[in-house]
Length: 77
Image (cartoon, rainbow, N blue to C red; front, side):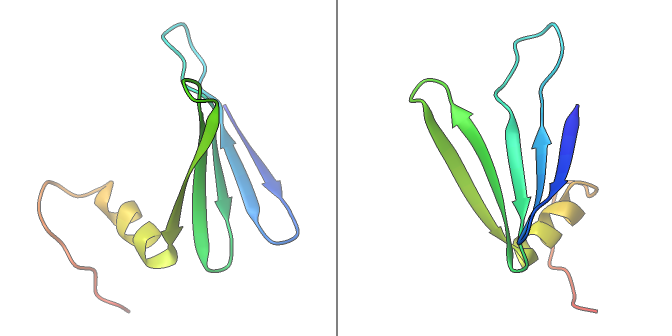
C-alpha cells in the first residue's frame, strides 16, 4: 500500500509494508524541485534515517533498476 500527497513544495509518497512476514517501517519519499529525500524510522535507535538524492542520482537509480550487472553512464538528451 502507498499514499501520495501533494504539498506546497514537495510531493510526498509513503510506502507501507503490508503482509504476514516481518514488516519494515514505513518509507517516506519527498520529491522537491532539486532533490528527493528517502526517510525511514530505525526502530533500534528510534531515529529517522534520511538519504538525499540529487535528480541525477535519482535518474541513474531509475535506470539501474532495469539493467543487468555492470558499470554505466547515462548520456544527457
